[in-house]
Length: 524
Image 1 (cartoon, helix red, strand yellow):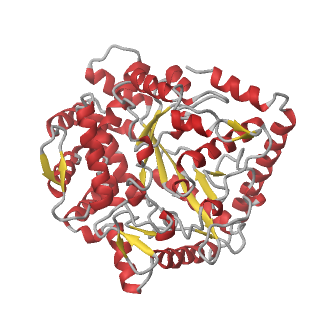
Image 2: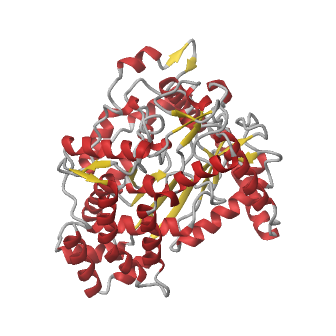
Image 3: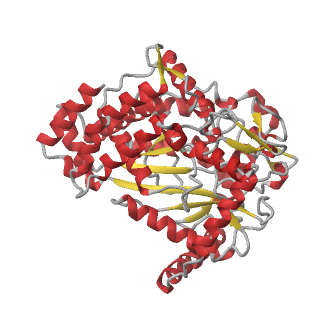
């Protein structure tokens, strides 16, 4: 592992390609529940002052009307993305009255599915389709899982850097073909080694027992209102969260672009008997978009996704066929409750190192046997990652302790960190690597351990802890007045988005049934 990475690092340095990394692009998508002061999900509609959830480029909703999603543009400097995210939080806090933004990934008090309002996007066909898709998720998985929040990190290497790597590899294919294969190699390695992310950054070792309707799914009990895992890191990424059993049988291939698109297309084109029993439209009411294994591509929950920028109305798989992979979406991050916006620059710098390492390391295809080891490792770290005796399975099935394997990965990431530091003045990437390596040697430094330590110190249930932290962040954001220029810019964006939604609704002249049929008729 180290030899192949170090060799490519040296070749890139010899080609003076390290400076091309400065043009990599980074963006964030961060979800946060709006909650009432009593710790329940807000029942109010999406605030009009924030604009249209359908059309606003930066402030929208995810599954629920109460689950805000903040989207940054892509930036070359990670700190700019975090600053933009901070501005969105400040603006939002000045426009949601007495409500709070929930500071943790796992939700607040859940009073059954009815307490989680499905997001509304207006009467346009595209808005109705987004709503019906979410209805389908409710019928298939229930709403509680959809109320979980996370942060997605979008990352792309510059075309110039990819071209330099292609020359070093002596690859004579088109740049599009090379780039797609390179990203899929990165994705496979992120599948192999991505368990490191929930170990280092997971912050959801405890949940409100209302999340499981009071059912104890092999948890420990922390008083009458909280379930927890003593060594857990990210219950969000466990079998009770996004790694749910409903999609366990899906075999989506990451071995190349064609295999990925073909396997995903099969899932969105094949009827599922269980979902067929639910029906598509019953008594004139839409329950789901279709009865297939997946309604659309985004229903497939994964650690990492290959992405291409889709044109209006273009399906994600069609965009991938047309453009190839243009960036990757990393979906493994919990909200860090100890950071006001849920993430900080150093954390993202570590992810950059990990992604560059995954790009440069050899990445053979993943067969079903290895995929089983990958799934085992991800689930084990989510539930028991800080267990001192925890053993993971290498690609060949041999056992290795988590600290030993993590240490090997940190050693192998030294070269990529140095490569990223080449266009900086103070070597922040090497410093980030050093800081997070300490969490392997001292698990008590991890956010998941800190959450439990604070709950213990304050004698709190999970909801009490999250509420206290959420109020602290509220004070932080409301304590800084909005600059007039920022307020005017975001208020203008809100007005423009509402006008855009109104124009879409006025222009629609196609029955919704025909719109859905045409959308799915454009299969790749």
